[in-house]
Length: 159
Image 1 (cartoon, helix red, strand yellow):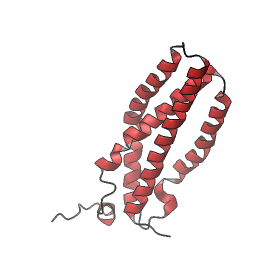
Image 2: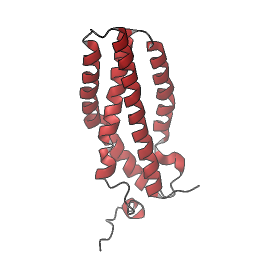
Image 3: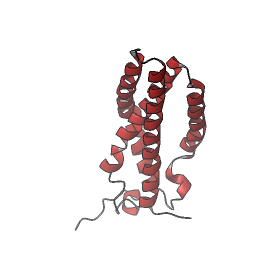
């Protein structure tokens, strides 16, 4: 099953945004759990602030480049397939990290410090994903011109 470059780009963006939104809700739930255990601790406020700050740094140093690289890779595909929305290495990484994150959340249940840590860490990744998703728009990843002209290194014709 072959897809258009634009459709594959939309699929990649949906996964990118979906991960960011899911982690945002998950981190909020974990921090809320920590607050229920110890509302007087400053860590229920520090963990989210650190998560946001580190997430912005991660976006700039890692996720912007990763997103650009993936968009360029998709544009260069001769016959895009649905599973090519991310590279095989990235898909393998996701297959490992998603269950690990779920396990960490379950392991944190009822443990204040661990809830703050995992909540802050999830927020870091969420902020990095959501912030770096701007690259999809900056690189016009959803434009109808996203396919073959870019793959050949040509600029699309303007009217």
